[in-house]
Length: 113
Image 1: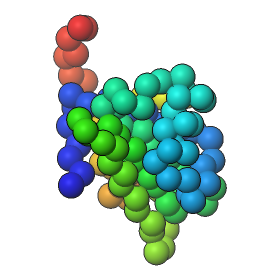
Image 2 (image 1 turned 135 degrees about the horizontal axis):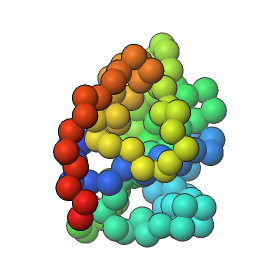
Image 3 (image 1 turned 90 degrees about the horizontal axis):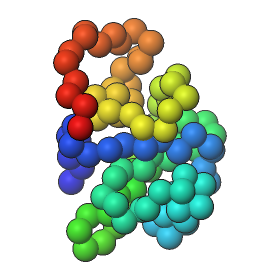
């Protein structure tokens, strides 16, 4: 079951990914290209060239979990920011097909950890 929360970190892999890759291939991309640890519990997002498929990879205490969604019509919108990390709210908008350019967030206090 996929659960999104603000305590988790979500990293966007910006390069096009061959969706035939499985857990081992995707975790290799995390290690080799993002220079991050796939066993950290963070969630990593991968998109295909047409942006109609997404895979989410995460380590879940005792094994990897892989979420895969293929749209029958339409595409996913990638955030315009140059950063790798996105919030759970942005990921939810991506998955639900909400146009990110029309969404604006109201200012909130953020405590620096």
